[in-house]
Length: 313
Image (tube, rainbow, N blue to C red):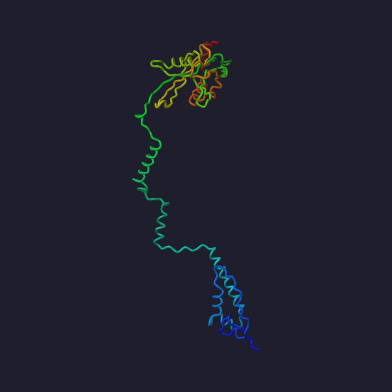
């Protein structure tokens, strides 16, 4: 009995076994992977007449071998595609003209030749003028001709008590035994701020006379000015007027009086030891003057003791 299951030369794998009346039921259709070639095309190429695989079938290859080779081919092709997907796509080579243009664009990091640089001239001036215009629109600046400006002068100082009595044996000075008078005012937040008494200088009045008068009005103490301490000045605006204020500070020797806060502008009055004066003052410029007074006080106390000026009690 002749075996017709083998394929004859020139016969495809689908035609094998057709002469013997074998089972021609269709094989179950397999699901094709995405991106792979269909099985029919792979099978047709494998069994095409005159192909390289035709001789293999003639030498004894079967239909199962063909389907297995097709599946293995699909697997190999699938691996190749996956490997190609993992690799980065190669960029096409650029022409010499594009490379020159690209290299010319990167010259911004290189040092430019001496001469007129990029952005100089009209463009830069235009940007500066635009920025200045925006600032003026956002924060309008008024000239001195539109705002009234006024100068004011004030005078005041520290009333010192107990200088001669603070000098001990050997000329040692105990600054905790020397007291000065301070005034306290409440600010807008309700805080009590300590400062030196001072006030406006009247026309034709000497600043020492102003200091003595203002100290008496604000503290109730009568003092005698004997030493200039320093001058501070600052600007502020009051009722639309810019005021440049200059304040002369002096040291006053205690003469007589009792502390009182009858002045409506003063909240509280107190005696403070010279050793604690700097930390009590609220304003930085007055703290600088207090440091000067602290450094001068030992010599001034010795002079008072040598002159025999005792502090009245």
